[in-house]
Amino acid sequence: MDQMDPFERQLARMMRDTHEPAPFEPRHRARLHEGVRVRRRTRVVRRTVGSALAVVGVGIGLLLLPAGPTKVQPAEPHPRPATSPTSTGSAPTPGETPTAPPTSSATTSLANPGATASDTPTAPATTGSSATATATSGGNTGVTTPPATSSSTPSNTATAENLSRSTPSSITSSLTVSPGSGS
Amino acid sequence: MRIEQGQAGEFEEFVAARWSVLLHLARLLVGGDRHRAEDLAQESLVKLWFVWPKVSQDAPEAYVRKVMVRAAARAGRRRWWGERPVERLPEGATTGDVSADVAERSRLEAALAQLSPNQRAAVVLRYYQDLPEGQVAEALGCPVGTARSHASRGVARLRQILTDAIEPTR
Image 1: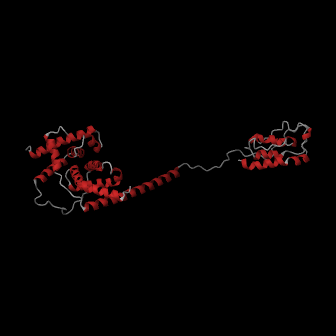
Image 2: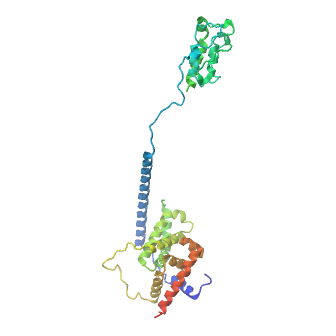
Image 3: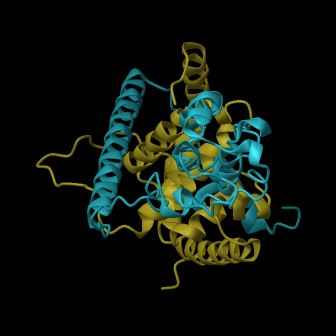
């Protein structure tokens, strides 16, 4: 603004000199307040309409989404029967008398597929129910592995009488474990 | 945004103190129409009300000036301002109103009215508000070079108009 020519200086002077004082009258104040009210109302209406449009848009979008039939499928295959042929006819060793099928051990392993080795009830080696202990380590397979070393000695022959006396501890423990860890 | 009672009082004080200057600025920006100038000032102050808590501590007048300049530029491009013809003029010119000052103001406003809205805003901000080119450009929302061009062309046009008014070519 330093290098103004005479016309520019005169122009600036004219702009300032033509300023006439104008007081802020009550009518100006009233009009200002009215303008504020109108603008506030407009903003509220605009916001409301915008929200309603957004809700309608979301609803339409949800309706137009490809909605296929709802299918409920199991995450895992169904468990096999409780007593599988493999578990019941598990390679009896020559020295073992197959008088009592180890159904309790098969039930335990299938009802408790996710059980870890620590959950597996272990039977004492002398009870003759070592098949129970080895069958549960198979996990989901449900296949009872034949006892490799359980009946190697003739003294561990599992007769019905012997089994009824000796297995309750192992059966009880396996049934106790299964509900908590089953899927 | 809701304004508290104290802030509303500050706003009222600001408006009462600056109303005259803002109204004159608006009048120059619209080219002399007093009613349009009042509308422009009111509209800008309403916008200021809603941002008052944010700008009250900084530069409320600069905010109003920017709003006013841009609104005037928009209104200048508009073809119709909502005016309707009436049977009687709302007010007539009073006797004795024609003085040297009024004649000069009328001449200036008539000359400003012939500029484009951007040229008029650039000239007013530059020569009435004494703003540097950077602030003129910011208020206009354009580059500095464009603002400088608007101002120089506006001054050149005003020079021609006012010289012709004083010394008619024919």
